[in-house]
Length: 286
Image (cartoon, rainbow, N blue to C red; front, side, top):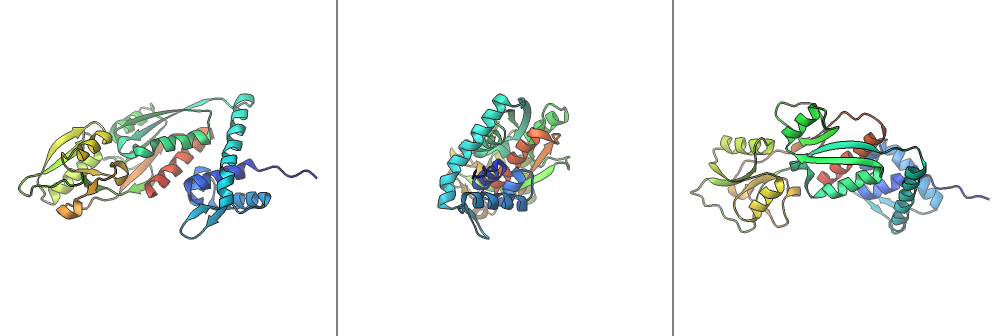
């Protein structure tokens, strides 16, 4: 009797669940429903005769057998995709993506890897810049997709996540009460910079710019050097940075949307973008 082969879609669903630690995110990445992903996993577990995932109302974790199977599952998918690329009719397609500097952050390598895992034959071009500049490039059709912060004058785009912000400073940094609040900011135009300055003005908090950086990395470096305070996402600041907003009585910063703009509607690039979008949701949630 010939044993039935493994369903590659089910194996891919298992890998997505393992990587994103969520059935919902896995479904988003695969552009399907949560129920369909659950069914694929159930059939895979039945085929292997092993429980691969331990699912509770609060978390999704691999069982010991699932953790052992994960490496083999990845190898299987990699060999399948490589074989298809060599002998199949699959052609390399180009996908140009713009990602706001305030959005990319330290998770970018993992996000790129997630897209490559979705489609190793996709040629990915990524540009990092300000939300305003990237949106202009998108409108000129120089970019297929942009992932940016909410920008003044734009109400289009899909909200894929909302991220909290805080007023961060170096550990041990002290503000002299008789001096304006020293700010480290991004260069104009920057929506986060404008928002922070408007909130301080509305709250009657005197401030002065002491550093202007060409990117979030530079601003975070100025913060850790003790130059002053910056409005940043906790995901973007180095380990050890402290949110001094409550201590100094600074205005609370709102959660800011991350928006997805794309003219890609179908095909392999759309599948890769779905994986990227789900990974962003997961990174911000984490």
